[in-house]
Every structure is written in structure tokens, then in C-alpha cells.
Amino acid sequence: MQSDPRLIAALDFPTVEAAKKAVEEIGDAVAYYKVGMELYYAAGNDMIRFLKEHDKKVFLDLKLQDIPNTVASALKVEARLGVDMINVHAVGGKKMMEAAAKAVKETAEELGVERPKLIAVTILTSMDEEQFADLNYKNTIPEQVVALAKLAKAAGLDGVVASPKEAAAIREACGPDFLIVTPGVRPAGSALDDQSRVTTPAQAFANGSTHIVVGRPIMKAENRKQAAEAIVEEIKTIC
Ligand code: C5P
Image (cartoon, rainbow, N blue to C red):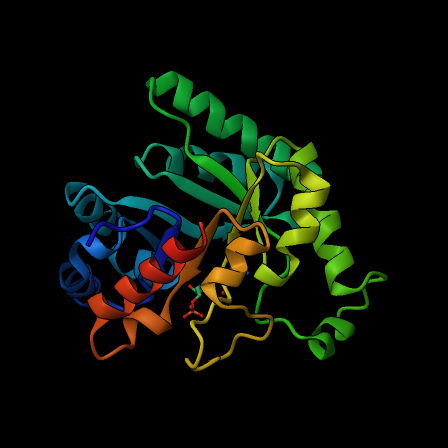
């Protein structure tokens, strides 16, 4: 079965061997993979090369946040890896995001390659109301997510990572071309794990998500390929 590039499967594995095995098992059912901190710190560019050799798109999810100069310098390195999407934390602020966008654009121009999409993490999908209250923000979670999404857009970013529950409000605030990448997606009947603000894949797209990120419901399934195919089928029925 052909995959759907709006499905990004999270390769949350501690070793390159485990991640490569998953990619081989899943085959054509997934065309886009997310490499996060665990796998990147363990396997580094070996994993990126492997995915590219297998014609997969790559979202390198390292969620950078530091002073603008440090983030810009790190993103110049990331932009040289040939990945398709990279990200920073929106709470790093507008100047940090502007420096990030400039660094990615300049690096892609210098190399003559397509610019990786740069998106910002808003509020982690594992964050519930009680934990959020501890942070003492004046906004509610949905208000804060929309405020951070608008800030990311104003800084020149391509989109955000956010819960599918907030996708509709972000779409409304940030317009039709803004990317909304949503983890916290669970096919009906699957375990929530540590996610709080979740929807089904179909509901995420109905809410305005452009991509969904799915980890454990695929990677911990007895048959990973079938689990991915079931999500692709579900997506096809609604759009
Ligand atoms: O296993 P699960 O489907 O919950 O995996 C979701 C993936 O998305 C994980 O790799 C997690 O780090 C990531 N993520 C998230 N919430 C965010 C940003 C990224 O769950 N706001």
C-alpha cells in the first residue's frame, strides 16, 4: 500500500539497529519519519543517511532552545544534513526564531538545496491543565498555544507543532498555508501512554492538522506495517 506523506512515524528507539529494523518492517506504509533526541543522540547522521537512502522524508525533531546565536549556528548544521523539517521551541522567543529562520534560509541558499521546513513547538502535548498551572502563565493552554503560533508566524517560521485539539484555533489565527504538525494522535482504542490532549488521526485532519506524528501506536504494535496501513486507510477516508 502507498503511504501518505501526511503521516510522520516517530522512530523513538535507543539504537540505530532497532530503528532500521522498524523502517524495514514498515516498508512502503510510511514515507516520512521523525528522528528525535533519543535516536539522534545514539545514531546521529548514520540514521539520517539510512532514511535518505530509503527515499524517506525526515523530520529532525531536536526542539532547539537557546540564545539566538547558538540556535542559529546549530540550525546551520542541521540544514546541511538533507532533512526535510526541523524545529525550535517557540518559548525561545521571537528573536531566537527570527535568527533560526534566517540561518536555515541562508544555508539552503548557499548549498542550492530546498530549504527544510522550520516549525516551532508550542506547548507539549503531554502537558495537562494541572502541570500547566504550575508554570504560572497568564493564559489558558489554548490561548498560549495560539499566541505562540502567531509569534512563530510573525518570526517567519513555516508552522508549529501542537496538539490536534488546538489545530482549529491555530488554523483560524495563522491562515491556510501554515503547517500544523500534531503528535498526541491515537487511533480509536489504542493506549494513551503519557499523552493528554489527544484525538484520532481523522479528527486531527478535520481540525486542520497538515501532518500527524504517531509513535507508539505503530512502533509498539505487534505488526507495525499493519498498524501504519490502518492509519493511512483512516486518513484516506476523510480527505
Ligand atoms: O508515541 P507517541 O505517538 O506519543 O509519540 C509522539 C512523538 O511526538 C514523540 O516522539 C514525542 O516526543 C513527540 N512530540 C509530542 N508532543 C509535542 C512534540 C513532540 O508528543 N508537542
